[in-house]
Image (cartoon, rainbow over all chains, first blue to last red; front, side):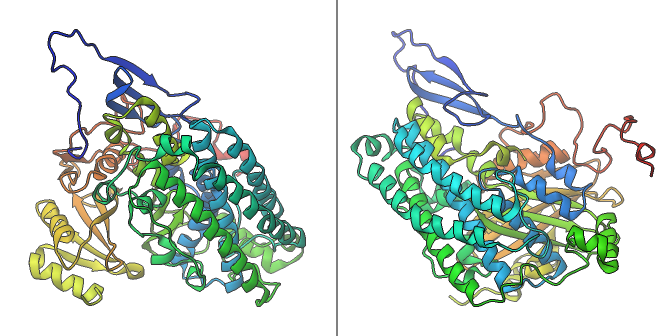
Length: 406
Length: 167
């Protein structure tokens, strides 16, 4: 808190200046979610602010202590619902790490495809909405069509769109079909043109630059002190990306770059997210190439004691019925231990701290939610800022209410 | 600057703190040590500021409740040395009636909300915290809901009893 300036507005005692209080939120069209900030305003300048959160707190950590591992996946959907597959797979990988399950390469690559698509979908929303908040609606509508294309790929892969619940412990519940691959290829062919167009609408746009450059700059020291991660930390100039530093799901096989900014302002965050979309496209293409070399029938690890068998197998095959029963009733012993696993969520380091006592559900599960931790700086950094700048600053933090509150 | 392994890290920590910091284990490669609350800020400061270690990134603060233990509330810190890409987990166990621990906000601003969340759910009193109030739950809540004695749902509900489902 000592890092940010405070405004003393009452230096001139002759002037009868008075501060006004503004409730920004809990529901406000400009905040894109349930966020309340009680701001003290001196004209249009913010003197101080208090963030109130918790409006959609759903006690996921408590519920998790009463649910078997595979039933926690749908809870993780509802953290960052703009990129639910990353949460799903981060959770799967956490449990797989606990259970020492080795995942086939093809499954890893399939996961990379879905996770990178999710990252693109998330960045489309964030950067598109940042455009809307600075007064440019076109780019948002233009890109939004391609989030729909990504959702159609999800639909083909797992059947649902927003809260995907994609995959199972050990892999996927079904193989990618040909339509899915066709849709992914079509997306890879079409989206680069759109992203290029989007960038040319914004990157050198005078109005956009005036609204974003130099707004809410964050130093490396502040970013690290507030435990920022993800695109925000990278925009400030720290090249910390979990995919590069602690590769999971075979990210070490991929050739990609970690974009970093210099000033940490809104404009840098925008550029970093755009560049990450390009890198994600590269990774998806590489994954598609790598998948060609793998056995096309493999879509999950061979772990019958944890991987839920398909329903037709359950009805027709005795072993599958037994395993189905044992998994659902939680009769398979799990190792006692604790594991921390983190993945690079769209907003930063999404961590799962799982303490297991050998039962069917976790003894304790804690989510390290990047939005929650990134947002803690918001009230402090808004001090001295114009209200209109604070709005686009919140927009570029990409705080997702579900991930904020858990 | 050589690579930092868990062995070197342990030597550094025990060289500085002796037997006041105990090694618990290395589950899944993540070194876990236990300290007590008198040492915790010194330990965190040492890890953060030591020129060789540089654990500058506070990944998370959370807590865990073991009702059957004498020191039933455990506060758990995850630190990350971005330079060496090594993580460390630190646990501090606190007795049930005296759940106090010094705040880490003196070292990291990010500890502010993490500690508020931990207070909100486990009732850990972080001494010296600038604003230790509830963050996710309603302000007039009287209990600390992540402690094990609090059931997930109202135990007086009957509509979810098993006999309604033939079990």
